[in-house]
Image (cartoon, rainbow, N blue to C red; front, side, top):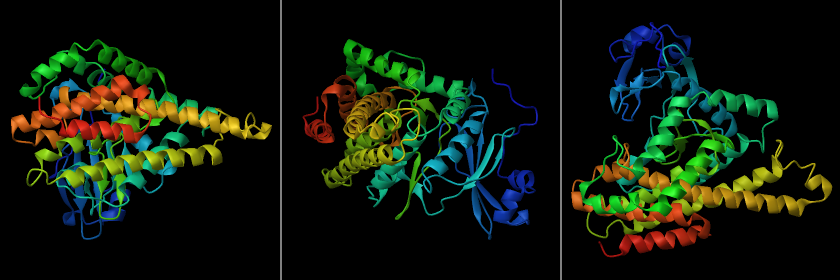
Length: 424
């Protein structure tokens, strides 16, 4: 039930300074003279209000949850408590992967408001990639972020009491879990009410929805998502929840945080790079102008996975203090090689899950409710459908053949073949 506290009020640019002007956390950063504050609503996501608030003294982001899905309207209610889970996710991510997420200055649970650090020299990565821009250090930050948050939020690192308490806390995020379970894993595979797709894809969509192997494997992955509470996930990690500057990369918006399988976050992230790869012809200044940029995208993906697996291995060897694969059973017994064998098995499991979850993300971002701007902004319907169809082909292969793809090179070889094959 979506109960809203009677005192809850959505913020507006006109009233924001009046309502928040006595909060010490804000006046410390912006000054006590609220007449100098300016606010601009910049929320372009599917769920929330987001304001940039600035003064001569400083700037912050004010994010407020709405009691419904902003993309759809009040016909789809959502609980305000999702801001509570985002707040708790941010403070955990900041400890586990320092300097990669915004600092939280203030949280009001009743008003569903989080005040946090504003990255004023950064832009959303998705928009930057549509413009064909490259960013040094991008892969390193994202690979380290994934390894550190996923490892340090799991039974490989945490003690039993803290791990179980965290899992119980995030288990209450029922409604946002339901969105993922439905929109990502079920709706794309039948003619669900909220689905939409480019009409030129009708024949391919019909083929995918009658593909028994795809449907079965997608639901094997759904079962993993629902049942494998391996670690705290960001839950919605994609190129729209990454901000970049010339020198920095930051991760934002973990309101879908939950406990789930380690490969989920990385799979969602890499899927969005792969979709951007196929979408580049729709943004090219001339035919073939983005080929080199497409290769840069694949290079970033390859580097993210390499850095992730390298850092995950380091954490396994140096920070494995939780209840799984205890050193007392391995290294302390002279079984260091067995520990390395177990690490290899775990990385292989994460690899296969990563590919599978990437595949379902590509499919849902093309056929379900929320699409990606890289495709949606391609004005030519035929060209947009062609880019989307190539992505769908890779997505299907990742879901169905994930256990037979043994390296990133094999995935990228397939992506390159799909990118240049004759249009059907």
